[in-house]
Image 1 (cartoon, rainbow, N blue to C red):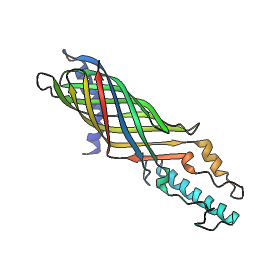
Image 2 (cartoon, one colour):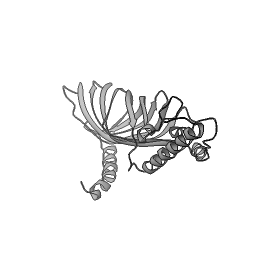
Image 3 (cartoon, rainbow, N blue to C red):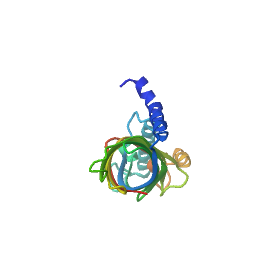
Image 4 (tube, rainbow, N blue to C red):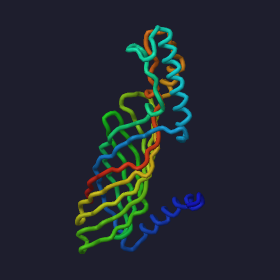
Amino acid sequence: MSRSILSLLPLLSVALASLLLTEARAETRGVLRVGVAPVALEPERDTWLLGSRVDDAVRAYNAAAEAYDRAHGYAPGSEMSTEPIDRGDLGVSTSFFTLAPGLEAGTRHLFVRVEAALAFGESHRSYGLGFYPLNLAVPMRRGTLTPYVSAGGSLAWLDDTRIDGEIGALFGARVAGGMRIGRRFTIEVGYGAYAIGGLVDRDELDTMSGYDPRGDEPPPRPDAALAGGEQRGAVDVSLGLAI
């Protein structure tokens, strides 16, 4: 698919949403999804905004660790020495409990969905907005079973609860398939085609740049100052309720 066609997709989505909302038989309902979703952001060399910064942080930390060991007489690999890191050590890995209240508007067969994207993990959380402009449903058995497919994405603020003062964001593109049972209950399985996100703490970066290897403490790990990356192919599961 060419870039020119891809650039038209947001306009087509908005046009479809506008068409659905003006349908004579359009209806609106409140929805709530509760589920679990894994997050495993791994930095790559070409990751937008983060790639080169991650590599710089790894090189700076390893150089500082080597200088610290040399200044204190610790042999490489000894119990007291500081282990080097690589790019993978600056990823973000967690499991989210997700909560997504929202609205669906459209017809029985085509609708749009807007939802709050709230997620809570052991050490991370995120707050944002999800928008699914493309939803196709096929009612069966007089509407008692309705399989559907959805496509859209979300943009959220990402927070590490162990760190104060960092700035973070998380963007994801997602498709999903589900089953509505009756008019109230849904089961949905999502596929995160692509996600990118990260966290940056500028104060911590400044602290790292002024590190003195002759002190008593080893260098601060850069994952407290910079972490993030990309993720592809994540699967999530949720249960839903329509109001």
